[in-house]
Length: 71
Image 1 (cartoon, helix red, strand yellow):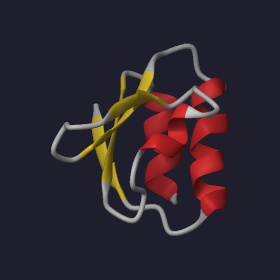
Image 2: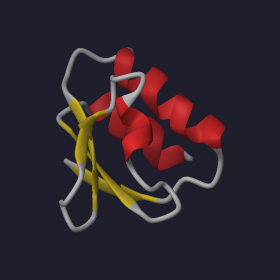
Image 3: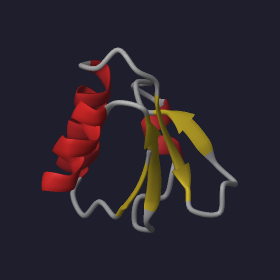
Image 4: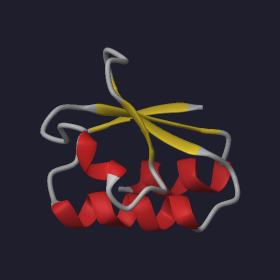
């Protein structure tokens, strides 16, 4: 599943990382053009993306998708 999302606050980025850590499935965050991709569970890697632009969250976790769609 792929979700496109724009984050407006640093807290939301940290919330995504914490949520990614709480599920067993892989969670990848990538730029919409696919140029940059990283593991959302990585404490440092999460900051590799430009979150002022929309990003894509890729995962097979239905739980994570439900939570992110509520934001």
